[in-house]
Image (cartoon, rainbow, N blue to C red):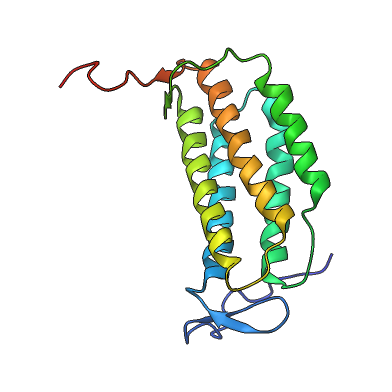
Length: 184
């Protein structure tokens, strides 16, 4: 593969627009770029979770998810291009089932925390949900394939399970006490 970025700045975005993969230019605050930015931010948070330390059963899925998120950003920056499909949704569902089945059933809500990696993963989960909301908003003005929406929806579920696993391997899950229980 050749050099992709020979010069980091181009000055073409100084007017508040940026180029998509098809050569068109869009405002930097467009819904498409907000969605792409949220997925980029999500991928950065996943990199932090990886750097904080994963349990072995999460290493391969996290690596694959980071690759897919980068691909998905490319798909969104090139209208009409398709990368994420139903096989990726199916894979994520299998991973979810594999990782969730051994966990104890939840009886209370979980608060973010439990360990540094689990807390960072909770941040990634909420960024994923924001990305999903932006993608849904984008469907009102542009085509977003159903497989993309399904993948991102399943990804937030996967990250919730990953949070549980990371918390249980660290400081333990932090359970919500509910209203009226606890200090005031």
